[in-house]
Image 1 (tube, rainbow, N blue to C red):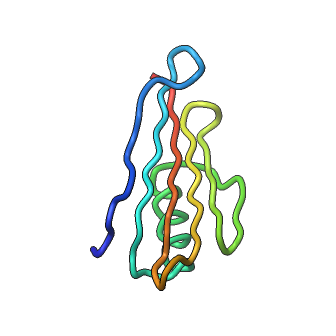
Image 2: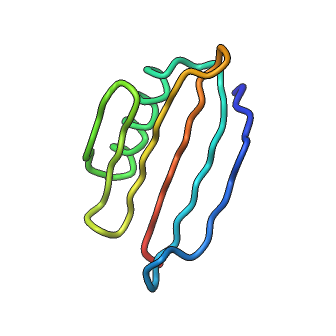
Length: 88
């Protein structure tokens, strides 16, 4: 619960009837813990994993919902960039 949000934006995507967003935050959690959390959350929400590395996880639900989490270590913390999209 130590996340510090740096950026949070959302709005219409470049395609009709689609919206997307980005959240960038830092946390004291390890990159592995962040990737594991997003992997678990995606599975609970019915998203299918697409790509997974120690610093990246993406998942989707066909073409309706998608997410991508990228983690990196920065200044002794973990920086997380989360991108998401969904049909509306």
